[in-house]
Length: 207
Image (cartoon, rainbow, N blue to C red):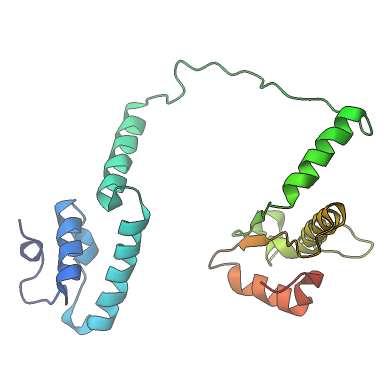
């Protein structure tokens, strides 16, 4: 069935060959419900915004949306059957190291870590709100202690700056920058930017 045949015949559904190809792929994959409420009055700009999102998803997932949908159907079918993805596996405690503070082994591993920090970046995942904690704002604003009211984000930035200062001192290279990437969501992005602006990035370089 052609993509347009699955939809209303008198309704414009795609304005370019690229959009038409994306629409045909979605309909062929059983996603025609995405177009069920489209109307001619929606306008080309609204349709273009939709297809832009689809194109980004198509390009970002390995194998495209066809592969994504195939994987989703496989996982849903396995879940419906009650398949256990961990069947045949046995839990075990991984090997590790117990370090005594100040010991030779501790100092050696600390030195390795500090050397690696010169080319390391930090990522802070901050897409959620503090609702479960009874807090109306973003979790990054939450105070980590009451004496100064220092927020979690300030403490984290202090840590990154301390690692950067140590890396510069140990290497003698004052140009070293230890980057921090904060991953936000639609719920937290504006508030996070406002917090950084208000606090002047907590002494870190603007990013």
